[in-house]
Length: 183
Image (cartoon, rainbow, N blue to C red; front, side):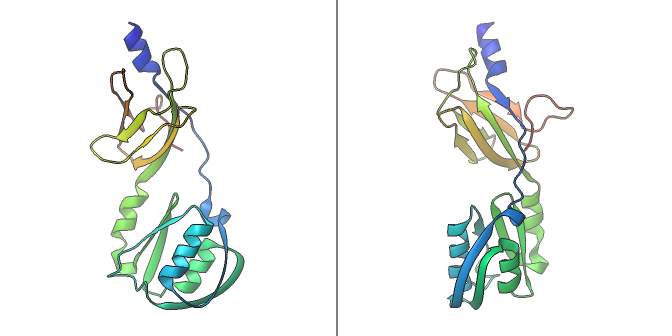
């Protein structure tokens, strides 16, 4: 009975607001002849964004000229990308693709972020617990307060494991509510 109670109380997730990074993240860049790749690297340094693109589809060695101060990331991208390159912002990721190859971006838009706290039966936070998306290598480890945040597919099942405890599986987005809630 104690073990069952522990397993039921192992993960308590909370709903949080998703930061509107496209409106909130701002950059300052002064580049006369930087490559697109160098400009994106600078934007990564100044923000929480990570850029993803296929070098076959996006000319990363293209020279760009940009001089902005405290400008939104979306505004800078609109200035430096070719007309045939689109971008999609998904959480803290920006995917660059040819406009006709937008399928990958659509797949990534089906992902959502979940966050929560892993606790034991006594309500104590479990630091260092593993939280993974079942069937993938996508995962994280809880912080000192037992907290975690993870971007997963819409139909994800989370596996929570900790040394000395039985692995728990929980639907990340259960139908009808209860349990895990998306951010």
